[in-house]
Amino acid sequence: MQDEIINKVATSSLVVFDLEDYYKAGVRTQIDISQWLIEGFLLKEKDFREALKNHDWSQYQNHYVAINCSTDAILPAWASILVASYVAPFSKKVVLGNLSDLEISIYESELSSIDFSQYKDKPVILKGCSKKPVPESAYILAIQKLQENAKSIMYGEACSAVPIYKSKK
Image (cartoon, rainbow, N blue to C red; front, side):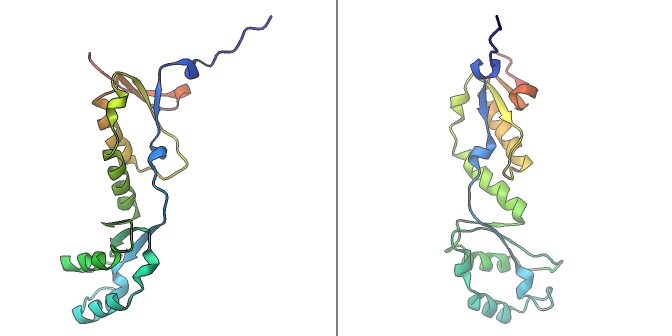
């Protein structure tokens, strides 16, 4: 007679919080301001404004957009704001920074809309492995939100989770 194999993880009260579930699908695009600068460094206002006016902004329709400058050009603050004013009507979201900064901003928006009270007094596993690009800072934000509610938090997978937090109640 064989003993039945019981999946203790499946029958436990553990709740998995998977940041990959909050990944927003969509094209991520980085717009480099240096393409409109003389030799990538010098902003001549009239030429800059003309180049922006003539650029095809519709190509960014429904994109998540990061605006940055890949050179060490010293730019007035209005330069990136002006670029944002052109791309914003077409894009889903615009940030100043690189694609990593963009991903962080998207996750910050997503996590701020979650009602974390659903994790009240529950043991939670903050799932660690993902196939989608989840920035490390999203885990930091998630742990702060979960910690306000969860009974305990572990990081990783149920079979090899690392304890992170246990409430003192």
